[in-house]
Length: 339
Ligand code: FDP
Image (cartoon, rainbow, N blue to C red; front, side, top):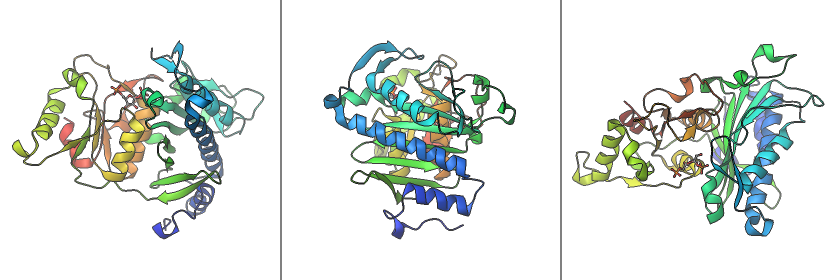
């Protein structure tokens, strides 16, 4: 298979990329999936536009409500959720959707045709950053609906598939540039939004995580929750050239997983949000629409992802909003930080 070459970067639109991917390998990118991805990408453009208006668009601040996780909902969390639902429910590609912002699944209304895919998303990841003008993003994951879904309503159980069964995953990042990073299981590609013409343009890929980058991302304030393995891993890196490793490391923490993972895809390193080792199951990140899509992207770019022990993509889900510890990025660093 010949992948698009860097020389062509900027000249290839998302539509052309997906059509060419479909021609190369119709199994990884059938027409239905291609159209679904284009719809998600279009919704992300609208979300990015709303975010860029900031105070002028009355989109900042909290709503006074909480989501199913008990977190305060920002206006933009709800706006982005609605935009994704509206954009995707009528196209005929989906059997249902699930989101961080909704307690249960969203079935496709009967007035629209149903498709064979399930879409899961975190409409605004890193929402604590919205009001202070730092990067936030949208994360999405696409699963195939189980075959026996045809002719019946989808249920929550249909969404509880391990991450290795994802057929596509990606994120949009609303930062200095608006980017879309995507995989259909055949490499990871980055598209930059050309704001003047409103078109996504291929700007990087197939992306490979550079090896050997000495950078880690972790919220140090959660130190008391770390397992002995994570504690040792971080302490050795903080000791740097004066410790057993004899090399200095650097730390980055954006409090926006999309931005931290994007940095790792471009520059290397590792991101850790471990589960609380004192309390089984207490973790921050959500498996189905945060950890799984990021794990698929990172694995496709030559990295790896564990929950601190086991491969994320092999975890059998038991709940729509299940949380999981995450250690993700450079293969060697993840191996050392996972016991
Ligand atoms: P947020 O809740 O603000 O949407 O999704 C969870 C997440 O952001 C990640 O994007 C981010 O890495 C993390 O939470 C930030 O956690 P801290 O508040 O502990 O820094």
